[in-house]
Amino acid sequence: MDAQAEHKQSATGDQDGEDAFDLVILGSGPGGYATALRSAQLGASVALVERDPVVGGTCLNRGCIPTKALVTATDAIAEAAHARQIGVHVEYRGIDYPQLNAFKQGSVDAMTGGLSQLLNQRGVSVIHGSGALIAPDAVEVSCQDGPKRRLSARNVVIATGSRPTPLAGIPFSGDVLDSDRALALERFPERPVIIGAGAVAVEFASIWQAAGAQTTLIIRRDRVLSGWERRIGSTLTRELKRQGIRVVTGSQCASINPDPQGGLAISSKPSDAAAGQGESEIIKADKALLAIGRSPNTDAPWFAEQGIELTERGLVATDPWGRTTVPGVWALGDITPGLHFAHRAFEQGIVIAEAIAGLDPEPVDEATIPQVVFSHPHGRLRGLHPSTGEGQRSFHGRKGDPLPYAGQRSDAYERPSRRALPDHRPTHGRRRPGDSGRAGRRRGPYGLPHSHGADRRGRAAGGRPDACQPGRPAGPPPPHLQRDSGRSHAQGRWTAPAHAVD
Image (cartoon, rainbow, N blue to C red):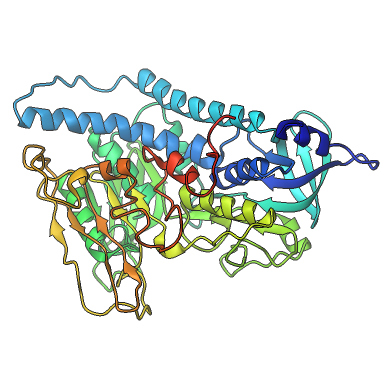
């Protein structure tokens, strides 16, 4: 009997009318579908509950995939501008928005359709509806196309993800956007104001500015990406200004009101972190994007009813393998403490699947998770850093001083390249190879390259894939959406790749 037949046999209704599975997963984002695929691969019967009409979660439908489709388009605009500088004249006539939106939606459809086909091929039962944990071993699903269903399982994985966080007293609307609404726009705004300094804010600022908008970025501190290595944030802030983006530092949004002359009037004031450096002003805009962070989807009553412990920030408390305080209930992704990236959730899903199967996986090492922002230029970071890992006693001295990219693409990141000079780009980025402290902890590399070509050879955010985790077969997970990320995730952790069709 093959695995798919075994799944169908074990995922049957019991005498009480319940559908019995080995594993039920709430949420089909990268963490959820990784858990489902790996568990099915290990012989478990799996039900994947998804409230949206299609699988893939925020990443595939309203996050990583559609955003990077827009990045691809505006990268082409930047390439055309660079071509003129080296004597290759390319005529740029503007953006065909219907065609661009079709390309964006086609990218989403290709990813979600392929994922749906793969889940079906692996024998995973996908149930569309809103799931709620009603017991440690039972889930009730309010189905979109019928009555409620009760699912029983030996283990339940919560992968409900997160949602954009609004500003207090400023709800989202047609003009006050979150990232979901920004991606749904039929045309790019002409005078957008973006409130926030993280990856979402920086990426949309780069996209809209490259398309010809007059973009303003309001940030609380003196630089974007303030949680990263300081040099990255400072250098990227300077690059954004060089591109024509107005960066209002040390400020925060006080109010957003309709402008009598049309559009919006956005009032800013000095931020709490400005130390008296910010100023109050009114900025006119046609759209405002609130990109101040995301909130975990853990506010459903059943979290408290089932005794699932939450942190002060509303995140699910887990051990390093993803176990919650309720036996048999696991959690991963944006609802757990740590870095919130798709590739991190994917790796967590694999660890949980293998732990449930009785294997002995190593937990995800947060210190080696690559961080990537697809701005212009791209930013990348991996490992421990003096400015982001305070209290780490493993750093002694300052090896690996930052170096200018000098126009090099990231293909030339670790060795001299005769192509570096001819491939000069108008990017004034910085890079630093990683190094090891006396205690053997690797200080991670970082950089602001033109692109992430180095990841094509498995160098996740610079350096060897296994440099940060001695003895681990696959090394840290590569950044999501890199050319070989799916293959790298799959190889080394198991013999048959999770993304391969049997």
